[in-house]
Length: 400
Image (cartoon, rainbow, N blue to C red; front, side, top):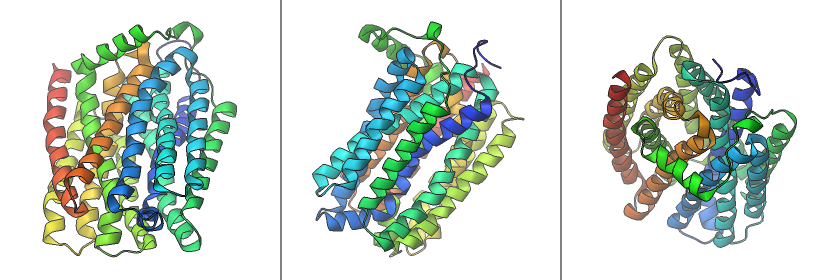
């Protein structure tokens, strides 16, 4: 059902545009991942320097959403989206021309800032128009659409590494950003009517965020999502060093291994789309928790028992991605369901917590562990162990 007579876009168009916007984030990780060891070598830095390019990206991604959300509540989704993706394009061009690690860090920071609009605005656009399990189904379709980019990007990145320099990857990211701007300008419709827009006052913005942070109805599902996606971003940062450096895969073989991750996410979203027509939100989350527990246990045990096996790493990744497909849309819809009047701020805060989880996980992996495999074996089970009781508490509140 819609929240008002005003409907900016159909469910399908909302999902397609939202999915392509969100896909820019994974593109900036998966296209880039096969090049990380080469970037470390070319720029004369260390593995810690390479991981830092991911950390600043996550930090900018997380913090910028807190700016993007209120701006979109005031000026509308389309105009803010165009502005933020222009910043993403600028960051991509800086990365393409970067001769030093410092300049690359600047480019990655700008990229993270600009791409934050994808998560914040896609969720707000859904919440502007849809509620309940219909919103869950649309968010699941968004997930299905965004899987196309991670399927193509690692293979494309590996081919580019065989044919040329990693700098070209950033030029491709800039092109993708320009395509998103064109899509917003020509194909999108505004989903936030003028009458529903919120004045841009710092005190009111702070009050809206305080309202969200003080509400268990928002925070519990948002934290479940943050912990689950924090795990995804953690192993996205660690996998190149585990599979390429430790296990000796070539960039192309690494891209082929990542097909297990992407295939699992696609399969999970297909199953989740069907289950969303039959199950309640709490049942969807419970299903995802079982898969998350299996994935967390697999990370804790399998890489140590089979240190030379790619499958020992990718099987837990597969279960984790299946869990994300069930948990992500349901937790997002649950967190935002009561906050339609500040949908931009609510979408931004869910994205901030989600990317904040990725930032903290990647930072801890860099700061506390010299060995990427050990970081994976410790951090991922810990995140699963935190997500499960948080989700159970949310489901208990929802049931009561």
